Length: 134
Image 1 (tube, one colour):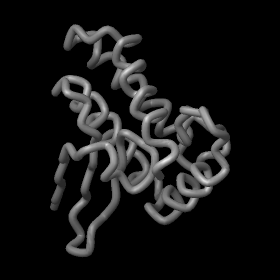
Image 2 (cartoon, rainbow, N blue to C red; image 1 turned 90 degrees about the horizontal axis):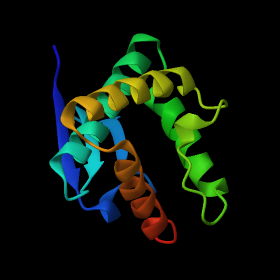
Image 3 (cartoon, rainbow, N blue to C red; image 1 turned 90 degrees about the vertical axis):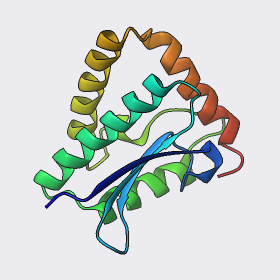
Image 4 (cartoon, rainbow, N blue to C red; image 1 turned 180 degrees about the vertical axis):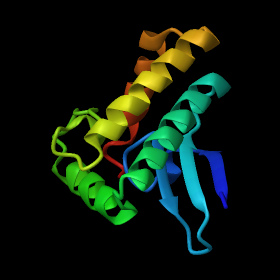
């Protein structure tokens, strides 16, 4: 049985410097957390990306512990000013799943009339604004 929650939070409430995250909480619910981007479409795009990536990881046996270990290490080693996503690293245990989720996200953006470059600028701005605080 699916037990999912997708929620938008202020960017400074993310577990690390990201605009989208997911984990299983203590009750077993899969929680998808998206940073507030002041445009529901942007938040939906990030939420769908996380949902697709998370589903593919679950199907392929890539655990939350593996993802978190990689993401937190990536964050700790991130050079100042770097806004790259951990999932874009070929070393990420979920690299292929992340790349597929990017494709779905871009197709949905097109259908929603979202300019991909504008969306990416908002994401990058959030990443730059919070890098020192996380």
